[in-house]
Length: 571
Image: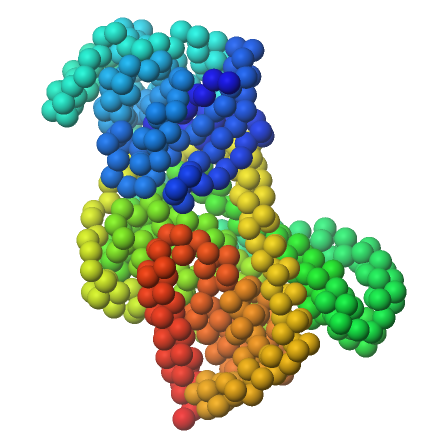
């Protein structure tokens, strides 16, 4: 089977072309030996089966970060390279193109964002570019599918270049300038409304308010879509499932097996949020409480990616994140972490140095609650008033800034400047957006649900043998004196290591006051990531890095919990 690799700079539209070539037959997994996501798909190209690989975006075959290292390694596996080039930024993209052509592999160039180049008054002599590069060049619009048929039809013309010879860096840049000057002309055009908005979204003042509006709209959309899915789809499905669950409960009768599978009945009925059984809470929490918000979040994230807003957001917040020991790409980890901390932790790989990755991962674990936990926070504190929810998130934001400022000064290492291509704003393609959302949701289900089942099983067993009761007694002085919480809250903190969202739900039956719930929920957000995130951070940071991060998390949680108790309850 032939291996076809898509290579190009970041944000040139490779995912759109990849989706057009492969459809839904796609898997996304970590590249061996790294935590870099690589998409692979099957396709029939010219009636020949082929594996299509979407390599991570890279500016050069001489790597400077893990993503570029993976791209350089994937390049060596290719039988044919589709080099995706941004037609609106030809000069910047051609450096990688020349590096690829110097290696003597069959190449075809997809001159992508062709429509956007026309909108910007850019004209490229495609035939002239073909002659100078010595390989086929096809104008494409990946999101709309324009040019994809011609690209596939011309794959058999892909060949090693006979006109491009090996060069050093200086010679290569000189060739880039010469080729660009010969094939590209730029005509004057007046700024459109979209141009003005694009400029406004990266200026400090206007960009800040645009970012707030985008974030608020995104959160509201996620909540609205999530609640809609719960109310109209998932809860009705569990209403249909309840009679079957009750039959299983009656068949099992009282005993440990009933407690594990069904859990504890309340007034003879199943309360899916509190039963704590594998077939009740174990199904309801992930599917009816968490999954709807995850679907909504990843849908919103895909739209923001495809419109081209995320790179602008990274540029806008670069100065702020530099003060915390990172650069603007740190916002990506925060934004992904709001959906699920697992992809948020994986996103730290876009940062170049160990210092940046350590700080980003630690701060995300401490102060960025996942969408599942956010939903539970709203559910637990919402009935008492919005002010208590604001207390939790305001505290997390303050902790993120303070701990970041401390770590930026204490953690050794460098924080290099950001170099980021900003793509033009585009209208997302529904097919591509839905495909990306589906792949991410499928990945979340595979990552999270097994750990959730394990957590519920473990909690039931620990409760049955009396271990949780012993822990509650042992740590009661700390919980009651320093944190102002009942000793029984220890069990929720233990479960928080397995699934934080489930632990938040366990706080409800304890009858705590709203202020106590604020303290407990805030500590759960800070003190340690769920076990799934823990495993990813272990791979990202190594054992020593993870141990250091864990120590920071626990220390911060105890300090913040005590301070909140002093401020909200008193000495």
